[in-house]
Length: 286
Image (cartoon, rainbow, N blue to C red):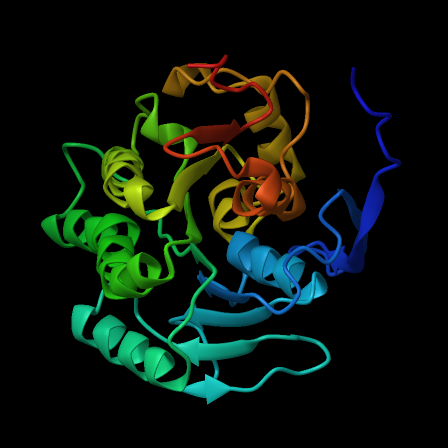
């Protein structure tokens, strides 16, 4: 016998599109207040998907700490416009990651959720991709998350609880012309995440992956340029062996934040080592 389902309650707080600044509606679900008082660390929190994720957790009452190389100051307190603390950090700088982690752990030796959302896209194929672009892509997209997770592993083990969510890409699952470094580095992050999940499972710590497809962020805007470019992407790019998007639209950062908050929540308490591909069907479930 099953109990009657309760009416879903909306998320607190209204989010804005990172590209337009206009309200895009409230997150909905049964997670209201679930993250109240939790300590959440989000990389790439100055813009795009990372910023939206940080905003989503803050709207749920979480104590959010953002890390981003684009931060305006070394350590900026929360403001009404940005209700989370933002620290300057190049995730590819291992020494800096270690120093910031040690500082935050000295302030409070606790972490409930870690989200690795920082990422870069360096275009190029075999003929024109530089060694520097390859190395930087790996450093930001894969090695940086490894270093950060490693620094917080003792805390997670001692707590015997916690959730890690890494932002990969649907490009980790299928090859893309001109995206060798990006696809390879995100595939490395995907594999890293599953290994971390396996190692930390005995401690009650979960690690999952959200792999977005094309999402309305500054990164995508820089690639496409205008609305015509977006429409071509939705319809498909045969020259890149890239299918269109069956749902007929580009994702918003909020679409990705929904998946992240779900995986970090108690509703996903028995889910680990899993990947949610939020790409509107663009990779046909591969």
